[in-house]
Length: 633
Image (cartoon, rainbow, N blue to C red; front, side, top):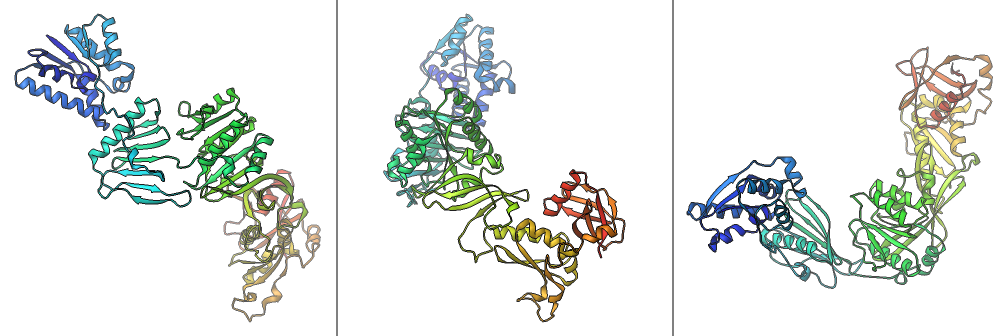
């Protein structure tokens, strides 16, 4: 009698079982090399099925040594391609070929393999598969109490749990003895098998060394070597279910949600209660007869059956969004918005007219909004997100309105500095808390405060940085800037840099003053109260515009200068100058003064791109204005 067992029969130990009861006594057991290869691959991946199958082969070898059976290995070893396509039947086909070639009976616990073999006329014996690791309940459920939010288990360590109420969570040991590998392996296999077998669970993610399981309201991550340095199980569940009435500003928030479809970011630190609040919002919207869906990975929001929970379709939330747009929900709860692609999907759905509620990790309310910067166009942010809700210790801590206004940013005075400004307004007080706008090609988020005596905060800090950058582009020595208020500043430079910094006729400082709406005094370091003092150098400095705007106007007529062709690189605008290194020159556009500079060692004047002067120079070049260089006098 010839018998060919397939991989399932070897893993279940069905061959040695029949040898032991006498059914296969004296039989020739022909094991395909394809079976050995598949078992070896499973064992290398850390799967218990592979180790169980190899143990069965060792038992068969012992029976062969005892003369009870004849054991032979036949056929070719499957290649990498066949192993990769094992789920598609490539290895099963090799096993059937061995059985057909040797006129043997195929022994299998795989119903599909059995039916295919019968269809091909191969003698086959089907045996019920062994129920491996079947459990009726979650193996670690008894480690949870009513106040337990999460349980943390790892081989060789004492089990820990995070317990308490929202805002007062604490870690504590729940066993005095470390958990050994055998117990961890038992728990891990039981959790994964339960998710596969139960109608109340599913496997959200399965990859080499990691399984993420959702069973009832438990989200469980099971990590194994080589992905982790030991078997680790992290199980999390919500400890509270709330409705919108449990939160502050409930009436106002209800009105906002019902007024029109909104773009909302729910932010907070891990464990603060963001998902619990999102769940309450979803239930409220559903009760108000809105069509509500969720996008989750993993799907662990505890919502009613009327709300369909969607995962990542084919591993892509973008594909999920495409499908949802065909369903046309009124609101979609996106848990969690984390990566750049998540923000883009959120924005696309919002711009398509879908109300969106996104859950975002952030340590401050404003941080949630800042995570959109650079991922979507700045001007589109208020259309994408009009409300930010910050959750702390399970309660609504802050609510922000997000709106756009064309205005002069707070702290600046010149009317020509008006621009689109995103205002972040405190929902409770109605006062603006932050302004977001573009400043010299940079997006800045400026905290607002009512204390005018603190120039080092908010827009004052940005103005100081810009002044320092502009002055350092022409000054050789040390530069220090002190803000005297939101509209006044003092710049301290070396005495030898005074003329260069002020520029002929005060043009350099006058230009900066006009751009920033700030009055600037230029002085030497000796004039600083904390400086060397006593040198009486005050006469060498002065207000940027003190020489009068017409001081350099006559120079154009006296000397039209040398025409130059500036070169624009990735970092600088470079002007080649025919003249001595270290000479001071004026750069003009169409005869109008732009700035004063010192010729560098390479016979060049370099202006850093992004600076106010560089922007003006590039604008002049774009407008085909003639750029000239004139010796400063």
